[in-house]
Length: 158
Image (cartoon, rainbow, N blue to C red; front, side, top):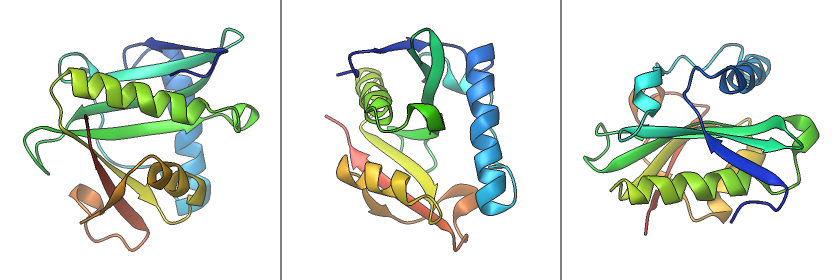
C-alpha cells in the first residue's frame, strides 16, 4: 500500500522525471563504487508486458523510483528489480517500501514468479530494506557475478 502522500505512476524509462532520478542514483553509485552501474537498461525492457518503471511523487515532485524487467537469465519467469532510489530529502517516509510493494504487485500480475536484484555492500540501508521485505541471498548473476561488492537477492512472488 503506498505511503499516504505518495502518488505512484508508471512512466517510460526515458520520461524526464525517471531520467532525473536515474541520474541521481547513478551519481550515488559513482560516489560509493567509483562508477556508474554499467548494466544495460533500455526503455523497451521496462515497458509492459516485459516490465514497468515507476516514479513516486510527493507534493508533485518526483522523489522515488524503481522498475522491473523480465530476467530469463536466472529463471524463465523472473523479474529483475532495477534503479530503486529515493531522494535524500524524502528518505524515512516509507517511499522505498511503497515502490517495492507496487513493483512486486505489478510483476506478479504480469506472471512473474520471482523478483531478483543486485545491490552493493556499500548500501546497507538497501540491503536492510530488501531483507526485511523477504528477499534472501542467491548466487550473483550477470555482470555482477564475480564482483566482491555485489550481493544478489531473490524473493518468490505471490
